[in-house]
Amino acid sequence: MFQKDLFKDKVVLVTGGRSGIGYAISQMMLELGAKVVIASRKEDLLKQAAEELSQYGECSYLACDIRESDQRTALMEKIKADNGRLDILVNNAGGQFPAPAETISENGWDAVINNNLNGTFHMSSLMARHFFIPQKEGCIINIIANIYRGFPSMVHTGAARAGVENLTKTLAVEWGDYNIRVNAIAPGTIESSGLDTYPKPVQDILGEARAAVPLKRFGTVTEIANTTCFLASPLASYISGVSLYVDGAQHLNGGDPMKLTRLMRAFTKSR
Ligand SMILES: CCCCCCC/C=C/C(=O)SCCNC(=O)CCNC(=O)[C@H](O)C(C)(C)COP(=O)(O)OP(=O)(O)OC[C@H]1O[C@@H](n2cnc3c(N)ncnc32)[C@H](O)[C@@H]1OP(=O)(O)O
Ligand SMILES: NC(=O)C1=CN([C@@H]2O[C@H](COP(=O)(O)OP(=O)(O)OC[C@H]3O[C@@H](n4cnc5c(N)ncnc54)[C@H](OP(=O)(O)O)[C@@H]3O)[C@@H](O)[C@H]2O)C=CC1
Image (cartoon, rainbow, N blue to C red; front, side):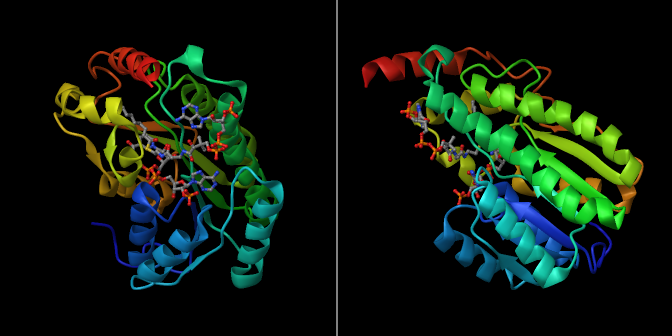
């Protein structure tokens, strides 16, 4: 759909690029000519994904937990040594667990905030200081979630993603001075490997949740990759500071937001 070689000679970092949405983004960027670096925690799975992705173009990898400062620095050093530059950062790595707010421990809260808010900011800041600001050019895309009506059953990630939505606006303004564009994508429910990680109550309501989306289906990883490539491309050269909801209008009308919380309360009690 995009012009072949759209990202020729561009260097792209996709965190969480070994699976699901991140994998689809990496594949599409490679098919459009980019050099792609993927990073996530599980080294075996990461290596395997990089090997598979190499059929589409030049893909490298480094194991990195985005919550760890020394691992983020090692990733930045690798990109500098291998490529000398970075053009596009896709902050896709993230995740959480469904739980009623009153059951979330302090460590559980901190783990999710560290993963989704702190990891995203520190990665953006590091890559901006070492690449985008000296280059006077850069592009950051933050994958968040549908937090339009809060996020019942996932208060921790709702708060973290709202933080990322807001820092997207602030960085778009501050780093406009350096010709850096910063945008976010808020996927609705996407058919991806990520959904398989959720417990039975989530699996049980997927049919109902799918029917409640105004477009009557969940999204695909390709639809999130399409949006990412659009926002990273010159087609979006005047777009910065926005959060694009890619959710079949689920944020406006997506069924009973409390249903999962009630099911999780019953599930937690029964264990
Ligand atoms: C109708 C459908 C609705 C679905 C909407 C879907 C929208 C969003 C979809 C997606 O995002 S798909 C992507 C999903 N993928 C993931 O979420 C996987 C990533 N998740 C993780 O890697 C982990 O959950 C984590 C959040 C990063 C935590 O990892 P970490 O290794 O730091 O955790 P631990 O050291 O194991 O635990 C820390 C702390 O957290 C508590 N905790 C962890 N899991 C749970 C749980 N399932 N329930 C309750 N608490 C949990 C854990 O107990 C620790 O706390 P303490 O016990 O020490 O107090
Ligand atoms: N699927 C959906 O419906 C939705 C997904 N999202 C978000 O989109 C993003 C991708 O999700 P999806 O592809 O579906 O799910 P996946 O679980 O397949 O992807 C999450 C990726 O992030 C990596 N990751 C998680 N934590 C860290 C960390 N601390 N450091 C480095 N890498 C990490 C994981 O790799 P590893 O385990 O090896 O670290 C994995 O590759 C996530 O942020 C997710 O929350 C948002 C809304 C809806």
